[in-house]
Image (cartoon, rainbow, N blue to C red; front, side):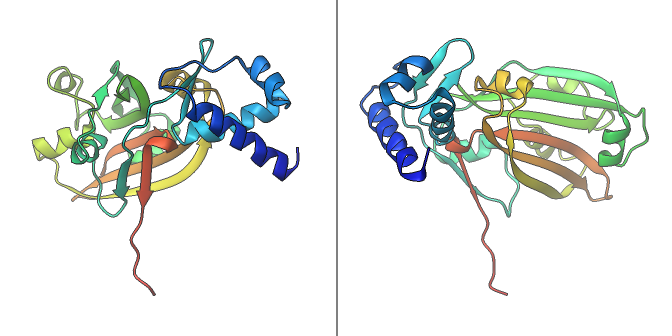
Length: 237
């Protein structure tokens, strides 16, 4: 399909989505593709763009639904802050879904990323963050077990490892290095965020360092683009 027909498809989809109230279910892909005169592959490509904007939500095996407009969580990247802190700033309620805590030994990959010896005991914390019953982020933090124990997560943990460490005040945290890219959702992440496999997500991989130079937290985060807007303020060189 050429660029102009694809834009026309996007315009037709935008008109349809805009005409429906929040939580309305869209027609099935075969029905919608036939109605709009396009292939299912082309329709699916256009739908991903709308899902990335947070306008629709596709649930595996259930259907595609119109999403009501929600405030966008916006943040500069110069200062490390949790989703909870950012959401509170715009009065957006967020909550943590099911929490999974695992005790795992460091394999070769994690040992290299966390600057520890292979076999070092690690605590891995996985959870989904929701707003208005919609999953918007999937977060996985891995820390040395002597930094954060499973017992510390059993009471009062609401989703942010960063906030928990800051409240505790030990160890002293000094900086974070974060790699940012777009990625397609794996099967595990797609299931957690109730989207389709290979849908585009914002992917952050961060290392949080202590004053002693050790990696306190190695985090892998996936964000739905339509709910987040990140920016960087830079000086002119």
